Length: 511
Image (cartoon, rainbow, N blue to C red; front, top):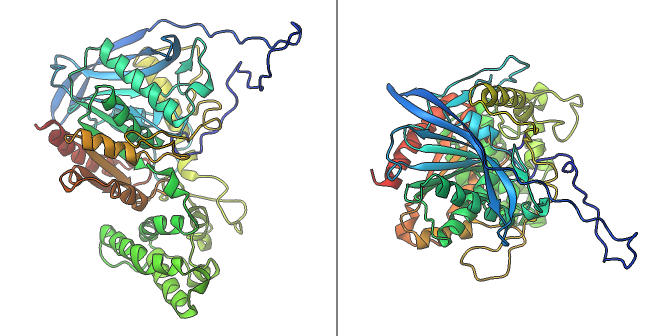
């Protein structure tokens, strides 16, 4: 599924010649052919009118599906970016908030947030069961944010219906800073075309989209476009610390493992899910991390004690924890927790369960939380956009941009750091810089307890180590939900998150 970090896979861009280029030859016959520029399309839109009932109030709104052109440093068009905007009719655009949504990948289209989260419609799935084959349905979304904000869903360059044009190539967009630059330009283009420069503004990113948001909000602010709020759903902000060492993954995931053991009734429950997770947090910070830090010099008695406690928290066996020297990889946990039940767990959402042909394997053969919903989202999206939004394209819709993830350049020049580029992005640095420069900027971090792609404990660490002054620490809020990476797949969690965001938007716009 395209939204997850570092997993988007697809073929090379159609017609793209990625062969290495040598120096120009004196022989005309040996001189490489220059690639032809891709024709630059006009900016076009399909505009339709709709109604939605939210909280007993009828909202009349306009849906606009279209493309915007962005330009390179030489002012030449290099990408046509697809978007769908929902704007309330008759609202004062000067005071009406506007929120820009996007998924992650890197290299993912925004079909998931568009059709599952806070837009005016949502896909019906059988989550956490597999949704199966068609027919699929989309319905009015009772938990849309359209009563609080206009909504703009953007497909990243080379994803969805977005395309490189002119002389634009994959390398112009497949990178941390290249991507931030492209999104800065498309958002500035949108607010210029639609005269929204003084509207309250929000960013809403999921997964790698949170990496983007943290860097993008600083880039936009440095360009004279400050924002009111940033919503981070299922975050990964610091790739450096996620890859920092032998014990980092096990410590970061332990509270998630405990939550999942609780959900699947593999532990002797004491208290609520939140209370159980809090016990795991405290243990991860204390005895567990201290034991792992001792490495090979961990006394046998302490190993036994910690193995027993981790087993009690997670539902794994003491024997398994002894054999792994207390270190638990997320992929292996997905296979091990329900091994006796002959089931595997989802990566994006561990509520989902699957079957492997090899019950003795170390990791699952597929992710049931991906395969269980993808068909429903893709099918419903195409039906909705063609029949309801009247948007037709001769181009295929790429849920994962061809070649984008594989070509991604992770180097990053952090805002306000004044240092050499980071080899792996830590955009929490950018977010902190933006918050110090704009003390009114608020951040809401939404987390699924059962997410094994972006564990909430690691997100807490990242957002608690931004070196903010005490007056700004309270501008960062957290929400936790009984769901996975895509919190909105659990409709009860979606309803709860809508309530939390209603308060967040009011605070961020001082209403």
